[in-house]
Every structure is written in C-alpha cells, then in structure tokens.
Length: 519
Image (tube, rainbow, N blue to C red; front, side, top):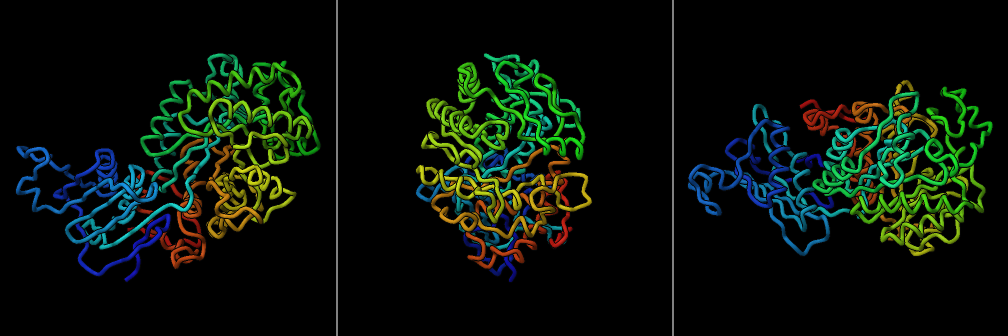
C-alpha cells in the first residue's frame, strides 16, 4: 500500500489496510473550538461538506450525544499535554478520526495534515486509514515577505499567512523598509509614511500599514499560530529615510555595479531626498557618527517593539556597501543593544557577524549559497561563537523570488540562475556551514523579495510549489534519513497537493519534475 501524501513529511507515518473514513455531512466533529472551526472551514473548502459540531443537532443537550450523534462517524480533536511543543498524533479508522495535539499549535498542524489526506474516491470524499506521529525538527519555521520593493496590503499578507500556516510555518518575517519605501506608521516619526511611502520599484504605487493594520496582521497571524517578525533594515537599504529625514542620511555611494543595475533593469541613479524606484542595492547609509541617528533608532525600534508581542526584531545589516566597515561595526553593536534593551531578541543578516560588540543574544540569518562563498560561513559562525543561533535561508535553494524557469517574467537569477523544485529540495540545513550543526540552528526561513512581484497571483506563482520544499527542510527529519525524505518521494507527495491548493485558490506553477495530480 502506498503511503498517503503529506507535506512536510511527518516524523512517522503508517498506511493501514482497511475501508477509509468517509467525509459526509453526517460526520460530527468535536473538541477544541478553534481547531474545530479550522477543520470545518478546510473540509468545506476542499469538499463542500459541512461537518456538524458535536451538540449541534436541534434538541441535543450540550456535552451529551443524541442517538443520531452517537451512531455517526466522528472526528475528535483533543489537547493532550505532555508531548513536545507543536507535536500531534493522528489516527484514522473507518469510523473515527482522532487528532491529539500536545498544544493548540500541534492540534492546528494535525488539522492541516488531515486536510492533505482528504482524497476523492469516485463520487465520495474519503480519508485513508492512517497513523501519524509528528513533531517539528526546528522551532523556527519562517517565510519572509518583502513589502518594501512592492507594497502588499493587509488582505494579501493575510492570504500569505494562510498559505504558509497550511504547510506548518510558524513565523512571518515582514521586510518593512528599504530604499524604495517605508511601510509602517511610526507615530513619533510621522514623516516616514507621509514622505517615504509612496514609491516602489518601477514607479509603481507605494503604501504603508497603519499601526492598526499592523496589529490586525499580528492578531491574524497568531490565530494561525504564527509569530510576526518585523524588519527595519539598517544602516544600508535606508534611502527612503532620506526622503523624510535627509539630515540622517549619507549621500549615495554610486559604484560601477550600481550603474550596471540601472542600465540592465532601468530606473534613475539614486539621489538623496528623491524617490528611488530602481533595483540597485548597497548605495545608501545612515550617518553612523551622528547621535541623532540613534535617537531615530530609539524612536522607531521602540514603537515597533511595542507593536509586536513576538520575541524577535530584525534590524537588517545586509549589503551595507555604502558604510565603512568600522562604522558598520559601531552601528550594528548599538542597534542590537537597543533591541535587546527593549526586551527583544535581535536578528540580523549574516554580514553583521563581521561586527564586534553585537548584543550576545543576536540571531544571525544566513542568506549565502548552499556552498558558502566569500567568507559568508565565517561571519555566520560568529553568532554561534557568541552563544546564539542562526536561521538558514540559502539563496540558491529557498529564495522564492528566484526564477523557476528562464523564460518567466517573474523573478531574478542572481542566486546561481534558475532554482528548480529539485534544487530547492535537495539541501539540508545542518550540512551547509562547517561548525554550524543542528543544535546551532534556530530554524529555516524562505524569503520572497518583491522586485518583480506586484500581486498575490505573482506570489503564488513564485512560491508554490517551492515553498513546500522549504517547509520540509524546516519541519521534517533530515534529508535522506527516511524513505520519505527524498526528492523522489517529495515530487510525488507535493504533486498530490495540486487539487487541494486549487480549492484554496492558490495559483501554483506546475513545475516540471513533479508528478501533478488532477483528482
């Protein structure tokens, strides 16, 4: 018997012979209220069936089954304390589906797995007899959405949260600021959104989140067991600040590389205080030796920390080519100390590992290649030597904005060309950097930068199915450690999700090499 298709691959899965569980309007679901609601919505979206909540039949007493309810097939969702965080056990028989979660998140993830198990059998919807025990490999499983290069509003962000949560991601990193725009209202620095939010790559419209918008996103993410990680990228990627506070910004450093990007991709060269809608990076910098800069940081980071109940605050630190190395070190030390002083754990991109004096809790995010180049691995090891951990985001594997096909109008190719689904899958987080083993890794994150991305349809086309490869790297056992943790298994399993994704309104790209189901 072939194993049911589940992505990310569970820790242990057994397919059992026997008649399947039939999903009909007669099925009664009971248990933890939020999990029940999530399952009802998922089943209706996938099959059209309306599961009945226990006690929902007219005249039945709360907590006591009517005769009809007692005879009906049932799905039972139960919190069972004592297991590892976010873990669950799922068992399916002909008459009963039971999901036991160690916590609310584990129960939610069990529901997502059940949604993937639903299959069409002729005119019937069924769930195969199955036993699954599942626990995540890494605590941090993230996706990143860049809302700075192109702005994406609240509805799009919520839709991406739903998509990511269905694959058991539990962190949403929002890249809120960059050269092209500032996207979050700061009450103490209102000029940032009044003057710095209107532009985007290619001259497209900008936009920003009010603080109420941002709180709405945070609450929505929490309802899907996701933590929002805000990023204010500094000291480079800060041209937008010059529109509101030019006195805090250095003049752009225009290298030949910047000129090449302008020639190849269009747009004018950057000018301090003028909207920038190009795609070049590395030319901007805040003034490192001006105390007014750190007053600005205290205002901005203080408000962002207050808005964000999660433990992390990302302060960038990448591609600061317009900042002298000694100034960069001073800045990153002060920025991370400000964040730590606010009671948050700082995160920086791996370049900050070159700086001495980082707050010791600072987490490093590696965005180099699967085979490190240019000392990226040594900078990343610095965070581990400091006693902190790292997030793995190798650009040539799980940067979701890389082209999936050379002829695609979406995406870029600087991370070693086209990223196929197989290349996105065949890497392991603990095998990338010598001296950075599994215990040193906080988790895995799949970024999606938006230079070429304007709509939710664009997001879907780039992210799916490769986002599922990142989900498996983050959740499942190590590559090659089980029969399921192989490309050959994955290409069949992820292909089986096509009908589910279609029912969820996800416009995935049917990449070559994957065996896509149409059932």
